Length: 123
Image (cartoon, rainbow, N blue to C red; front, side, top):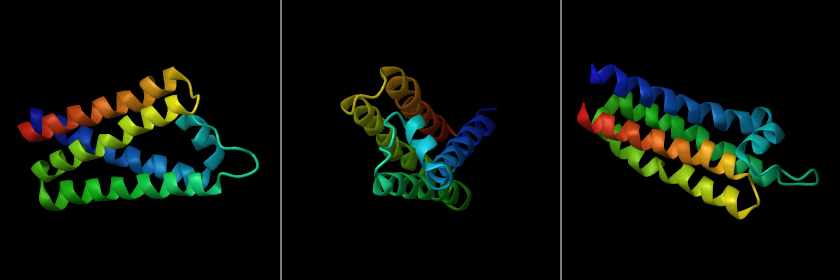
């Protein structure tokens, strides 16, 4: 029973990384606002590109590890990747973003990733 939950959560989180990365290419301003630190009208093109180009490959690497290497490799990957939303929490807070977004989106994502890692280690 634990395996489908562990694998399912890992796949959902990896796909979420892909989706978030794609949003920064397709709808960059809306994605930045959702991130918690809206982009300035007169710039921030590099910020939007960096954010999108960082998240999408993490999703692809996670899926590749899960399907080609296995649950244990994905678990270690998830432990490391949890650093990203933790740092995003700090970035949003340091740049005047809403605490609700910092904790409700980014910190909650980090917790979900850590739960995924634990479940994958238990498989």
